[in-house]
Image (cartoon, rainbow, N blue to C red; front, side, top):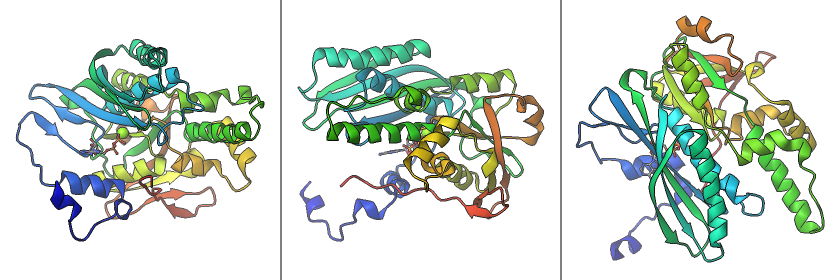
Length: 350
Ligand code: ADP
Ligand code: MG
């Protein structure tokens, strides 16, 4: 591996965005098998030659980057690690079936601690009828790392890729946005207070909804079921893990279209609004909704002809529509000004 160390013209990780980095690393691999229907670039890979396809995804959680042990109960962490992977299965309009779980831990953790982690993993498996079918166990010198692979199934004609949105389609999102990030803000605030005064007992009761959204997200398997019941196949879909703005931009880029999102249509829970006003006068709930991340809701487009089928659903909100190729992805404010959507940058930890 010596030649790597002496490579000339070193490119710093932060000079590329996450997606440019993935593109650069995966470029030129090609496709050797007919059963590889979709490779890198969507929420899951799509595999198989039959009518029923298998979808596969993997996501890693790293201590100190994705979770903080001071306020993340291990049981919640196990649940969340499974849930966020099942969310990517849902984002293909598929049904989750199996998971594999890999963990790297130091001797800082006891067997009982790992049992707690697995109690959370088991709870999520039970709730969503998923089988644990394997994994890997390793030691770590720095912190805990959990990597989960999830497998799901879907009929070919029901798969929703990121690339299928068409002009005039309606842009929809499930649940509400920005609440998980508000939960994280509360936890970070209480952590600072606790560190200053270890006798301090945080009062978290009135924040139950936002805390649950951050610590224990639920994959929207119910939305996949709802769409099937209503006989709707979304023209495109993605799950909201990095904030609405970033995911809207993915859909538009991959579908080669623009879109208009209406600010007043964004679903924001009152607890999210309350947390924002407590944190700072300058913190707007809409910014949390656009950039907060970790909502694990589904963002999808449907044909206008499906509008009647979904319009009365309380869990699905129509937030905008698709515009023609070459036009930007924008948000329209109540004052009728348009703001171009931007994704917040990705930065490797130093
Ligand atoms: P998501 O947010 O849905 O989990 P990501 O943003 O993590 O998706 O990844 C985008 C796409 O890039 C996915 O198709 C994923 O499988 C692929 N990908 C991410 N990291 C790598 C990697 N290191 N090598 C190969 N493919 C990757
Ligand atoms: Mg995803």
